Image 1: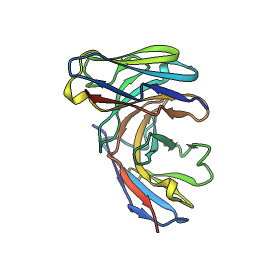
Image 2: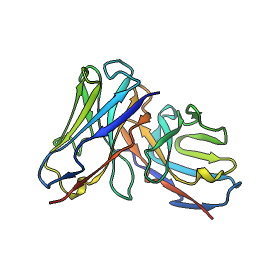
Image 3: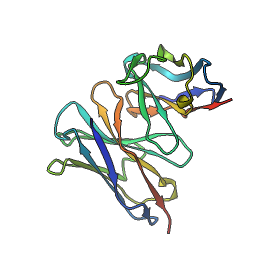
Length: 109
Length: 120
């Protein structure tokens, strides 16, 4: 099973700052199969990034994804108040087909 | 705009079967290109994929849950369902239905989720 480890567990930043979230895989993941989601309290996850770097429909361009192999990054260039949430990475592989990271909580400093 | 809505009991007794239905609007469960999936999230914890069904009826389940899970499709009602048998407190979670894009493996539409508590 491919394990995704996200870091940091909690990230405390202020609006306007840049956020860098990491997702590390226990085995190589095809870039085509790495996605990022945002989840706010009481809401379902929302797809942000797919294919490691492609923004989903309606996602602002301050969100960007990068990486390959075992190391992937989600960057939020300038934090807006609505960006404070929990972020999950997810991979599509072999067995089991789908695993998620444990999440990074982005909180207001 | 594709909308998914979960429905079912919010309380299930230990050892019984959890049953949930997902009603899809704005999309057709009998069309190709998508897997119709279930994902759960225990309170305060992360996300866990449970399984999916394709319009052909083929299914794929997480191996650790496979002996207890059944996902089925009702194309006449544009719905798909989850049954999880022999539940324990560890199955208490918010259960989400979601659409999964075939071939690229990401979940592009999600239901709002429904909390199922396993308790006597």
